[in-house]
Length: 153
Image (cartoon, rainbow, N blue to C red; front, side):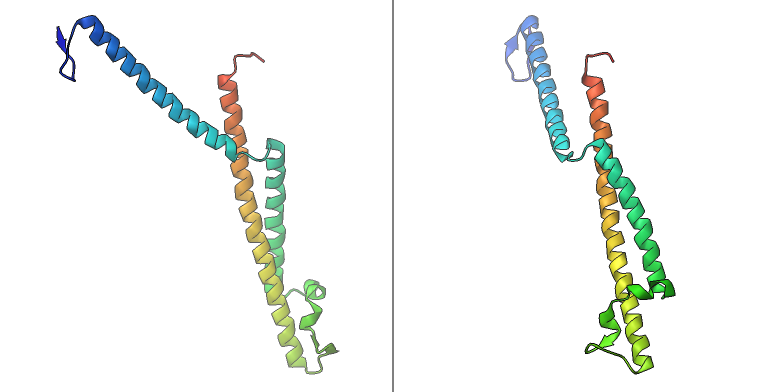
């Protein structure tokens, strides 16, 4: 006779049976916790693989484009003088007559556009991170689907 941890005297067969059932219960709990994690991860997937890759490419291009424009606005490139808002170049809907005031307003317009480009590039960075996460989730989901499928392709 063996003593089980609870202090009950059991014969060898019953002790082994109880140990096996406890081990099965532990395995079931582990499987359930894994399933819960899997379900949470699957709910985070909201873009398909092609859409996620397209968003990655577009956001990378947006970061490059707006970053370059921000730099050119910051160094006051003459190529972008037409993109400065007219509200910075006019005073009470009349052209500015004082040249120093005109340059001051022109520089504030360049700075405003540079800030707008920086904000846009930052938003594209956030979109790029989100799209990369969606690509990773799609890859992870495809790998798990291959492991769990019994169909040979």
